[in-house]
Image 1: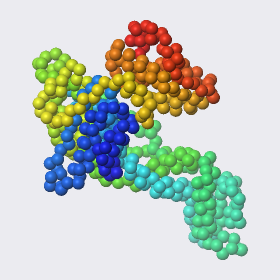
Image 2: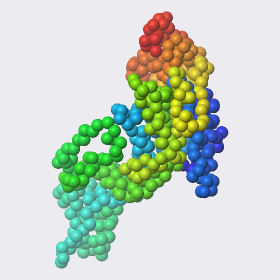
Image 3: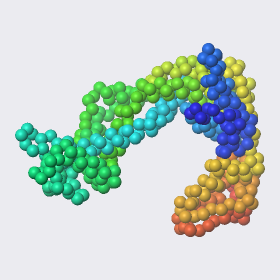
Image 4: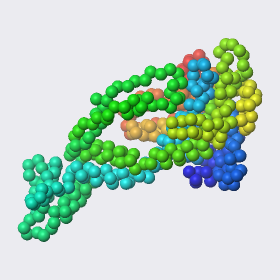
Length: 483
């Protein structure tokens, strides 16, 4: 996380360039916002709390990269990130979600993120403990009665070469304490046998063996279903857990194979090794200091109070959002979360409403505004070839799994870009998403027949593209319907 925060604005833009074509103004704005977070951590504590993030509004049509910029920014900074549609929120009294729900959801994402990091840290120790517990079941320690020679019976038949103090008896494996000709004590013999079993376990030679484990008996657990009205999910009360704890947990002894037993025990040990109090504290700190919320479709709630009709709650939603954006405390089941330093990136097409239609108080909380431009044919060509996750590379990888090799020529890619740009002009402009529609139509036949085309090479050139789209190119109404 620290390495990501130390990226310079120029390095952040370069990292975004690997996935997003164009939109330099938006990239610069988010790069500065991200760098300012790092700068804030370096200043004196007395002034640190007074420095608030400069929230951003991205203005532009759909499919030009608004969401992708915010998502990639979050990945670069390893910050908790959530995308929410502002149109899903309604003011109190109307059907919809409470605005505080997005903070609770962001906190859950932060908890999951930090817990995963802690799981990776303790994975090696959890694996070691799981192996030892499985060995305890495979090779129980000897508990000899008083006055008798130590002897241990195991619930496993040993298939490797038996040594002089190890014999196979029917379905059980017996470790004899000692023989008259040896002075080795029973503990050494047991440890040697256990070490040998550990080696067999790690080599996978015991994968078909079964051991007994006590597992939760879900068939006897009471069925509890909660039917709630809208908004009850935001109360952060887990009724199933609350009522489930009232009943004693029942277990049943089951025989399961060694690999599955290892997995279950390792999962249990991982949870035991993790300090959830530390996880929660770190997650809340991370959410408060570096969380990013992407508020999409904010133009849908722009507009002043009309007093009647479907728009009656628009200004109400803005007023509900205002305290969250300007900074408040939100109660979650993990504790109080302050929203003062969460970065809000809002986005909208604003083809009907304007940013100035937002209430002045909310406008003031989004001081940075950047306009994203519509994508041209030249941009489409770059989108198809330059990014690490370009559509052409995705289809290449998919069809390689069937043994089919795809090749693209320059004129083929240019024709795909040209078709996408034309269709966006003739119909609704959905930006780069149009490329997915066109590519899927072009490769439909190959994708269907790929299992029977193993070992073949297919070249996607202009002629191939025109042939695949002949009917659609000639019939404008058909192109509106299909593409």
